[in-house]
Image 1: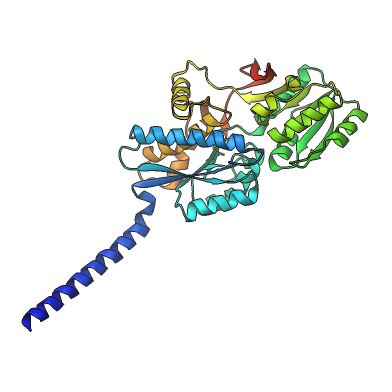
Image 2 (image 1 turned 135 degrees about the vertical axis):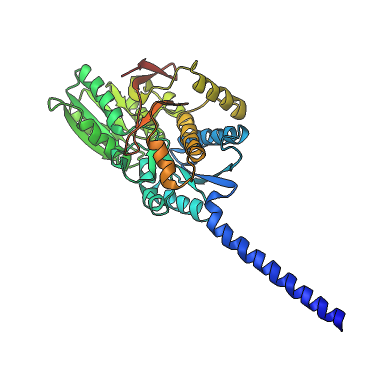
Length: 381
């Protein structure tokens, strides 16, 4: 009987001890999840759709940054970085769903994304409310400047790109320009930025078009009636390819000013692509140590050359990781402030300095297409 009593008491003690450990563990897990060993970086990117090439390139860059950080013990053993990617499909609704899933289900502490301005606008409220430091590899709408305390970007605002391409238009003495722009946050923002950089002596015909438009002929006929001497096209690769093909079909011989979104193989291989001139941030020379290391590691890991946004995706992720490692208490506020305070940071995509709004400053140049490849016309603008 005494043995049974002792056994019962022992079992009760074990039960209460186990229950206590379980409750304590759960309480600590809730309190310490942000500082746990495993840190998830979420990526909101268009892995499919007409911006899919850009999203896939950025994703590989992010993956490379995480591989390097874990391999080199960049966080001094405090954290193992993991990546979770959600497809924004290039639209605002899916971007918002992706961000919510990454934060609430995958417990992402940081986000890289989105590639598009519309997708980035969509996630700003949730990353602000939940204090998730976020860096976009390419969203460029001027309206994103200072949009959130927890947001920065490694691609300059359209204000800079528009200034460079507008300066080129002025130097070429174009007097009447047709602006064909995607009816999106990005397209409208770039159109307005271009307007603010040209003198009143240059008149424009502004034509918004929906993404995915198949037939540009009515738009092109309108342009022909207006006797313009240049086009400025703000579009995405698949739409740009269709537009260029129809410009050639209608034998419209006009110079085409464009945007950095044209830098896609499907555009370079399009008929009439050699008429294109667009502004783009100038990356470091391939002999630059940071750039050379990035390119070599990228080739080794993915057996292909880096594409557009591979380097900015890499830089966005690496900045978040370095900020986490450098900030002692790892609070979201301290992490994003570390990034905003950076000056002359050498990234794979170039030397970067940030302002109080989270905007980056970079050097721009002009590119065109020659022999099916993108080449520089001018640098250091």
